[in-house]
Image (cartoon, rainbow, N blue to C red; front, top):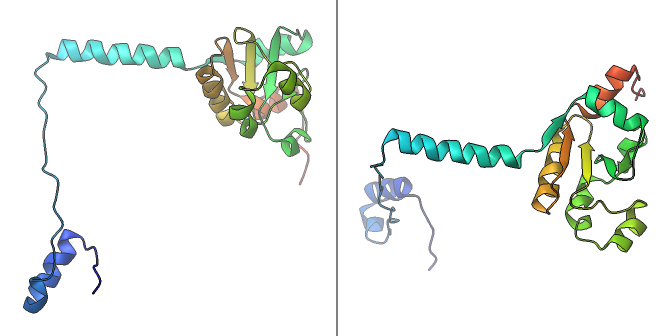
Length: 179
């Protein structure tokens, strides 16, 4: 004999269609529905929501514009990193001057490496936790993820060039390579 798990609706239909089976069909138990009523005044709830918003605002990386990024590319500094999180095959199409490549797929594991191993693997010094780090990608989505990963790993001076490679190429007049 074998058992078949049925939804409550299917089991009820089966039980109605065949009285002989109805004795053998076990109806699944449903969890009781619980409704919570808030006894807190609306002003208290608003304060809690505002506090949550403040925490989220602190978690988001600061956005860097093209105008803010351009001078950083003209005067690179070893104390400030511009990190391209695109994959190596994407970087072959071009990159922003003075940037280094650290693919997003490798960030979770690489931020835990010791400084010597990091440098050997990626070819540049591992950023310090308080060092300025600007992330960019193709369109700004992966760079936002990179910022989140960096924040979760203790980096505090994080920026996201939200326009990323697409914004850079359009403002610099760089035509993307044709496929």
